[in-house]
Structures are given as C-alpha cells and as structure tokens.
Amino acid sequence: MDIKAEKLQLVQMLLATNNEKLIRKLKNIFSAEQTDWFENLTKAEKKSVEQGLKDIESGNAVSHKEVVKKYRKWM
Image (cartoon, rainbow, N blue to C red; front, top):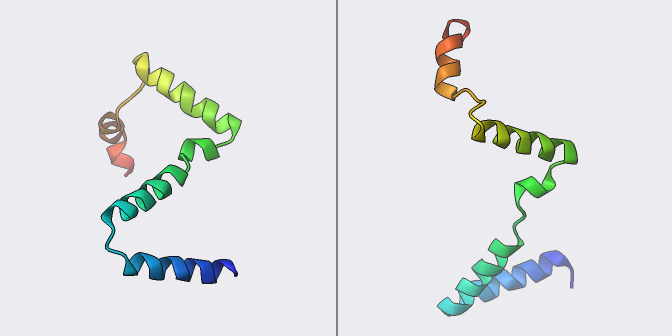
C-alpha cells in the first residue's frame, strides 16, 4: 500500500472513531514527532543563537522598543 492510501485509511479510521483516549494518544504521538526548530540549525547558527542568549543574560542587549525609538526617523 502506498503512503497516500495509508494516510487516507488513517483519516477514515480517525473520522470513524469516538474513542477519546485513542485520539489523545494519536495527538501525543504527533506532538512527540515534531522536531525542535533549533535542531535543524547549522552549528554556526546554533552558536550564534547561544551567544545571543548569553549576551541577553549578561545585559548586553538592546530592546526592540529602544531600537525602534532610535531609528524611527529611517522607518
């Protein structure tokens, strides 16, 4: 059976059931399978994000509000 047929069969089974426990289990499976966006980043991108978080923690950051205020004339 090809993937499209299997998906259709699953949809039909899901629509036919009133088993709330089964539906919750399926939702949990889908939630667990979703990947974290961070895991899809390159090593360089991860390093950059981590450095940005360190900068924020050390107070070395400027808020969006401050940036907008400073550069409003160019917007």
